View 1 (cartoon, rainbow, N blue to C red):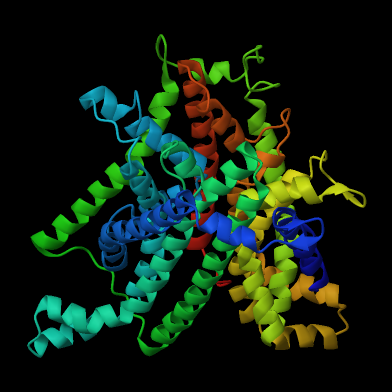
View 2 (view 1 turned 60 degrees about the horizontal axis):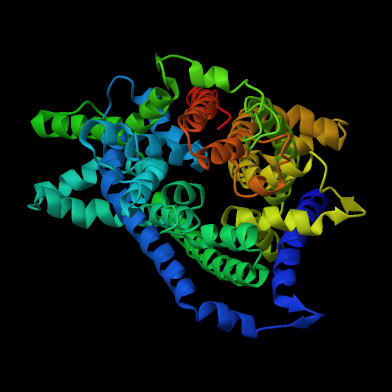
Length: 538
């Protein structure tokens, strides 16, 4: 059962990454370790490392400060539209980073909403990057911390207050220690996502700011400096591996904390002026920080040269001219993205489903190691993977460089971890005795799976498919290298349009970003409906 996942990751992850890194660090068959010192000792590299760490730490702290009150509101309060609002705050997390960058460019950039109203522009500073990261990761804190907070019995904190502790002291001594593992896990996830940030920094950072991921892209695509890119890739890989190790440790701590506390129906309508004020303040934060950028994105896509209308959307169908960066009308990117994402979803379901089934039935050090391996594509430079595809998969028997399947394969690498993480808990909950009973009654292994496992995991399979489709649709880092000029994806088309001056190019970028946002939002709302309309499978 593990043969297919192992072969897939060996051929389409291990081989391309090792090929591109080897191309940069080996010359004439010899290893050149001095390149590490050459690259790491330059002031530019030190500045990039410092900015990567600094912006990730600042983004994480800012996200926690803004999102923790929201986690409390979703965990403790009941109010109309709560489920819909929970889906709304999760929409930014599944949006492609290119769309996030476009939304904040429309809000904070030249000609953006703040520029039009008050002449304020923040796109040339680091604040746009930090706010975009908060926008992107708000749901991580709300889901991770709020999920645990809703299971803590509020009577423990109330008992401490009865014994004489003040409200803050009771929270600090009772609730905070129970929440600490979840807060740490959320902080580490946010730090990981912002540490490897690419699309947001690429669009909003300009030439002044670059993370390791952005610099890997520049050194590879613009300067063809493979040695520098290889060193930075290994540096990022080591940092991400350390972060994933710490994350795994905090997850184990969080699971232990959940076993020590009871689950209680703690959510209730707000009481008193203070609680209502907190609820309304968080609704205002969500409206300004999460909803407003998306509204501005839609508004900018409709603000044509002759007033509001669909001029930019109609322009997407126009054939390219001599000055265009496209060889086909930009609207073809919509069909391309949907087709690529559909194929990538099928690949991710097959590979991830087989991996989850094997991990659910077996244990041991090898399987734990393989489980960790499945997460590496989320932290490895997507730029390295994409360029590695071009370097490694260009000769028989894997001559795929000119094949359309290359894009879905790269997208599936990102989708597989989501499939595994979604299906594994459900598969582990299936009682083995049901399978054994089916076998005793004469069912073949395939029929036993179809009659026993599939009905129990059908909803998890649909949720996994939705996540794989959403993340495949928005994959940018690897696709920007391997998407052909006559078959661009939506994120690649948006990046190309934003890279050219002119009102028409900007408007078309906003229109394509809006289309991509709507598709991702519809997918997420369907997932939220599946999650809340349960019938016992979860």
